[in-house]
Image (tube, rainbow, N blue to C red; front, top):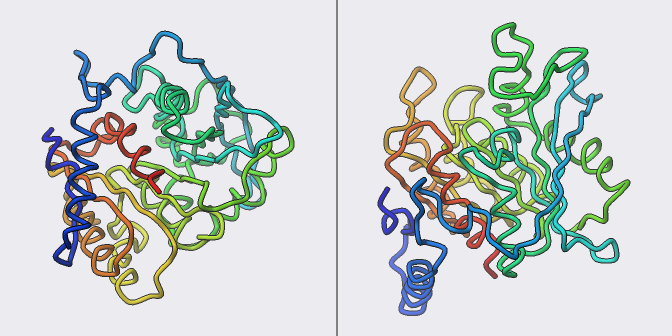
Length: 310
C-alpha cells in the first residue's frame, strides 16, 4: 500500500495557497506521527493494545425489527471507559458489525476507539456494531458473513443496497432508542459517524444522504456504488441534487471487484469525482487491495482522525 497516494484529496478545482498549506500540514502530521510505526502484522500502533490505555466495554445483544418485519440481528455495544452519563456521547454505527468489532480481525475498531479517545483525538464515542437482519427465530452462536447466506434468509442486500431511508429509520426508531434507555447519546448529527464496507459502505452513505438530520459523517470501505439495487446513480445525484451537509471518507482498492453489477474501483472514483465537483468535504483514499476491509481497516485510525477534523 502506498501511504502517500492513499492520502491525496481528489479535487476538481486548482487549490489555492491556503488549501495547499492545509493539505501539506495534514500530511506532515500524518507521516511524522508515531502511530504510523507499522508492526509486523501491518497495523499501526493505534490499532494495537497500548499500556495504560483504558479498555472500553463491549457487549453483544439482539434486536428483532418491526420495520424489517421478521428479521433478527445481533449487534455489539461499545462503551468507552471515559463515558459519563451527564455528558452526551458521540455515536458511531458500523454495518456488518461482527467484522469491525473483532479485535483480531481486519479493522479492530474497539482498540482504535480506545486509543484515539484516550489521546483526545476523537470525542468520547459510544459505538454500535450492527449486523444485517436474518429471517429466523434464533441465531446460533456468533453472527458472521455466512449467517443466512446459504439458505437465503439474510436481509443484508435489501437493507444495505436499497436507495431509501428504511435503514436510517430502523436506526432512528428501533436501535438508537434502545441504547438511549441506558446511555446518554448525542442528538447532534455532526457528532454521529456511520461506517461500513462493501454494501455496508453504500448503506452508510445512503443513511447520511437520506437523513443528514441523523448522521453527517460517513466512512465507506470498498463501497458498493454499483448497480446491485441502483447504487450506480449516486454520482449523478451528487452532481445535480441540492448539496447535503455531510462529510465523506472513501477508500477503495485498485483490485476491487469487476462483475455484472459494475466495477467497484471505477464506481468509487466516480463518487470521488462527483463529490469534488459538488464541493463536498471529502477524502478519497486509493489503495492497492481487493474487495476486503483489510486496507480500510488498517487505515481506520486515519479515517477517524480525518472525519473528526474541524
